[in-house]
Image 1 (cartoon, rainbow, N blue to C red):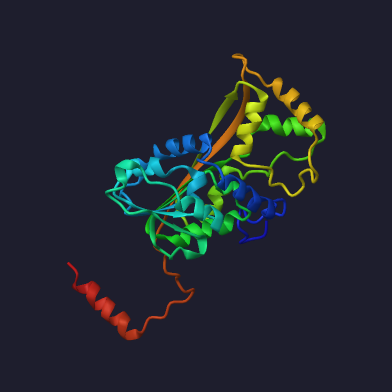
Image 2 (image 1 turned 60 degrees about the vertical axis):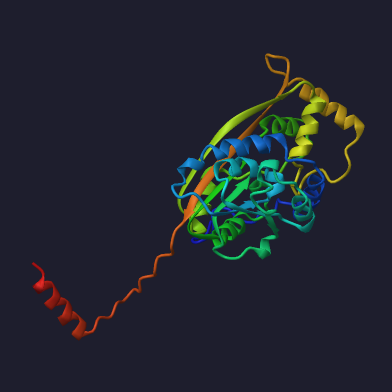
Length: 302
């Protein structure tokens, strides 16, 4: 890495066209994946670290994140603006009905696209389980920094590199190519936050094990969570024979309770946007008159 280069940035292994198709498919879902909602609940448990409750917050990739209710419970009076990555998800998010208990108290939330967000317009950016579907993490951090007001808070979660090691090992053993795009390490994400101008970044992670009654149920939920965005993935259509082989291998992943078990690493991060410090020039010029006035002022001090 050259001096001054960001720790993580755009990756040539990421297929952005596949990511757009994936978002269009997920936009048709009636609700966010269960795992996203669960991670949102866990991330909301960290909200008490924010000393000043936000008055305005951005729900980044709101529909797929599934965290609106968790944040509303913590900050019922805060103004929420949903932000979606494209127009299809924007339309899907705009048609969501607000909770019955809130209809009389607030108008429908605004839904924006990334280019429509005003600089320094939010006290908090909330981005749940979406960063691992971004091609350019450094650019995403820069967008969040630009959207936050001074002393604004960033809260995000994403999948880490310890996600689905069972699938990685299986695909490698069978010679099937990469099963998914590699996810960024939390230490690299912390470095990237600093590079983007954030202060006091804190990163942590936890390992979750999800279980299903059958391999088919596991595949169904994995498809609801996302897809393979790796540019070097298998280019053609998989055959029924391949699917049968995959199901047979997943059958071996049953735990002591007889359920198919797969592992997920969830990474949490938060940071603050502080006021930019004024740059100090390498040479400072002080007039003789100012120096004399300063000396006289120091002599007059008790």
